[in-house]
Length: 320
Figure 1 (cartoon, rainbow, N blue to C red):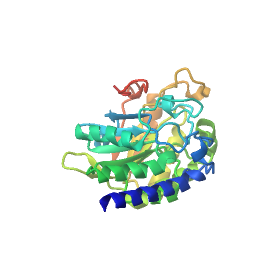
Figure 2 (figure 1 turned 90 degrees about the vertical axis):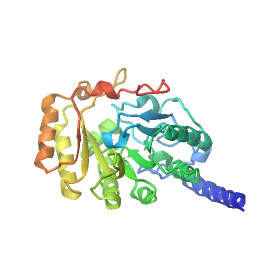
Figure 3 (figure 1 turned 45 degrees about the vertical axis):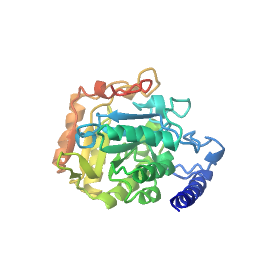
């Protein structure tokens, strides 16, 4: 009987996944391509299972990494193409990238191996264009008796309908909030509609989670919302506008991770304005506004942090 139930579930899931991939509208681009026939949309991703890297990552916010680090599943390609992306080795849509696992069974096996080593959380990194697979991985882990904290680590370019389908499945939302200016969003990430999309998506995440981050006895996050923002060179004014929007539209009680880790991409073309690191004055200006707005929950970074976050996805341990 259990075998029959599993088969029926599997058939139902395959039908559902096929429906979502047959005319893909998982992200705001709504390419409507048939990913079952290949990767012809913006992100160049087909319908197959793909994980570019599955590894222990200790470079996230302290409450996310915890004592043992988080097991992160990095998906290949992306629905944005940020000119300064630190994960460009696996996020670029115009080239093939390393694939570590290419089936549900293989992904789950690698994840459970890291969970058995002590990881308490599983992070889905750049997951928007692989949402059906995210649902399947979560279900498979639960069926295997594993109940890790599920972290949705996204660039913020999501659709509200897709986030609503994640309610009760995701424990922690970890979105980027990159821009409010459509022109900057178009120039730097190829998505002029990013500001409108991210405003709607973080409001939905806030509706689900509120402003509190619930911690375990050991200080590891169990549930909540943490909004990340990377300060870019010459764009302190944009960072300040984003913080003002969050304070006014959500709450100054929201947890903010204000990142100083920007570094110019090596060997890749990018606008002249991005060919330097941020200055202490730029970061301090944003921090001062953050404090003036009443934000008291979150994390700041040291200005010497960029070197600590430069991954090499050609290695089994990209962040080692």
